[in-house]
Length: 102
Image 1 (cartoon, rainbow, N blue to C red):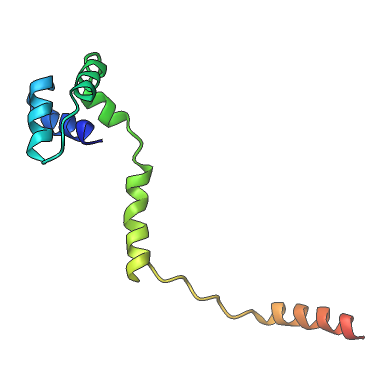
Image 2: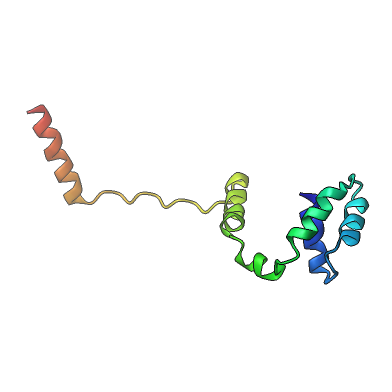
């Protein structure tokens, strides 16, 4: 995963996504570099327009995250309290109950 993040960081900084740059970024994080994974990543990104791929990425997960965070912290919007039943609704409910008990 760190290789993909390195490629995204290089893209954001408008640097070329090549083996040397990806290796440098991964080394800077203190992680061990697997040259085979670096080569595979660079080769797989050769024909990819990263900007288009970012725009096409689903954002539903990102949009749901703030709501989940708010719910966990107690800042979620309060649910509406149920309105008291109207007089007609109460009468209908009582009729239903009376039919049960005769």
